[in-house]
Length: 347
Image (tube, rainbow, N blue to C red; front, side, top):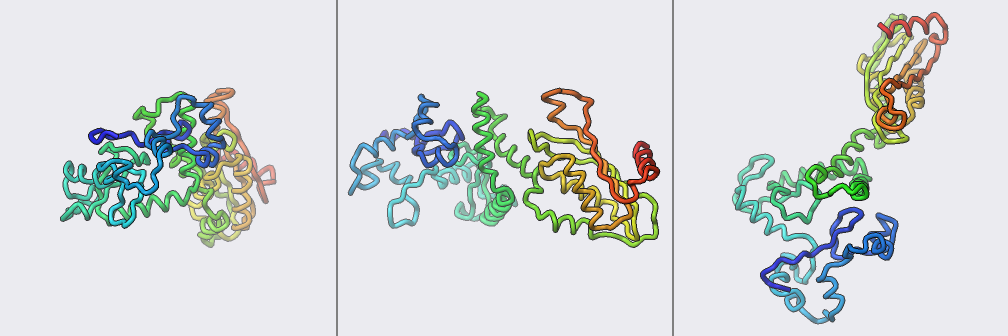
């Protein structure tokens, strides 16, 4: 190894863009369902191990020091501080990055503005998940308190959606298969953005629906009113067939039986059932069943209109299509009451 030249010490998996010393059957089998042989057949020009790894495989390292194997400069970089044994670490030397950040930005936490006495009170934090990037724009300086709080927040968010990292890798593979340049700044953060988007749009996957419905519909008020009450609103759901958005408009008619519902509760209830990819027909029935079982009204009418993006931007590509579903119970089964509801929602 040349002492004055930094060596490229990783290879990139063409399927998920992660960086390794060596691409192994373990990684390929676990995350991509193929073997190294199949990977090499698919990407014949892609290296599967670094030059240093090849060199170590071809020489006997037993009894030799890190200095003899790597050279003094590289050996110093890969020794873990405070360790009595020599341990290789595959990550960049964060102390070097932090020193450059301190020289450039000063001894100040970039989150809370706290001024620190020395660099030891600060931590360097990656802005993106490309942990091997040495670009200083990919780092911020944080005090230890802010650094810990930020990692706790990230951990809580990722625990909500255990598949976040798998989605990131899948989007990387999707972009690669579509021949989209992954080094384009417009696509650099796309896997993270897409995983967060699905976490938000499918947030209901991580909720206890029974408890949530009970919490929403528990706020009722006694009332002598026995006339029809109509709630209107809009929300967004996900099509389970294509994972594309559906724009919903809902109309809920309730004939109370001694109690009325808080004005904001129908909106929250519909949003809850739309927070998982589901058929519009199922959502309509679930909203009706929840209102009926919890409130015991004299009548419930739920009407849902959906503009499905899977019909607007693909397939038939029509801008005028709209799917309408309804669910009825109690007094709304009578023609006169049902007609009154349908006429009122048109106003």
